[in-house]
Image 1 (tube, rainbow, N blue to C red):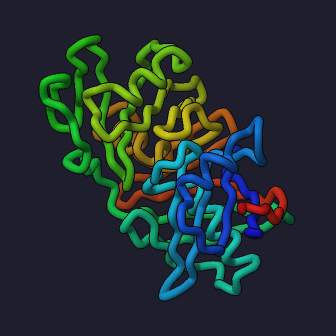
Image 2: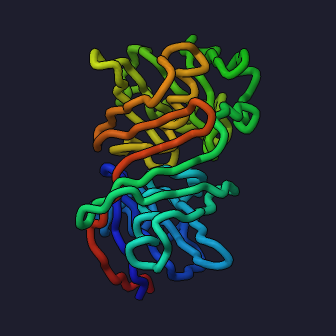
Length: 268
C-alpha cells in the first residue's frame, strides 16, 4: 500500500507521496488514468532529506521537470503536515526555489514561489534547425509558418500570443512537433479587455490541463521580452482559475493550492 494525498493547484491535480517506488513512471501511467483509476495529471514524489525535494511524473509516465502548480501543493503540504515553516526552499528539476505559504483558509492556501531569475533560457531547448528558424527566442516553424516564443523555466515552453489557433486542434500537433525532439509545452495566450491574459495550456506528457504554473511564468517572460505586456504583475486566467506572475527581475508566481483527499492504494 502507498499513501497519497490528492491536491491541486487551480485544478491541475497531483497525487503526492513520500513513499518510495522503483518505477514512478509506470505507476503514474496506471494511477493517473481518469477512467480506470483514481486519475490525476501526475504523481509527485517528495523527499525531506537533506532538503525538501520533489520529482514530478506526468500522466504518461514521463518526467515533467519544473511544475509551478505542483510546487505550490508541495509547499502547502509541507507547512500543513510535515512540520515545515511557512517559508521554505524546494528543489525541483535541479532548481532550488523559495516558497511561502501566505494565507490558509481550511483546505486552501495562497502560495507564492520564487522560481529564480526571469530569463528565457532558450538555449536549454533542443530545436531541429531544419524544421524551425530561431531568432533570439522567437521561433518560426518551417512547415506551417506558425510563430511563437521559446522560454525554458525548468521545462520548455512554446508561447503563442494572439495566434488565432484552436488549442484543441493544434495543442497535440505542436507539443509533439518534430522541431522539438524532447517535446514541448504549448501555451495559447490572448489578451483580455481587463488588461489580463487568457491562457490555455497543453502540456507535454499530460495534454490539456486546467492550469500550468510554469507555463504562466514562461508566458509572462515571453510577453515581456516581446514587448506585449506592461511592467508589473500579470494576471493569467486559466481554465481552472487565476495565477499572478511578476517577472521584473525574478520570476514570482502566486496562486492557490488545495487539498482534495487522502487515499491508500494497493500498488502490487
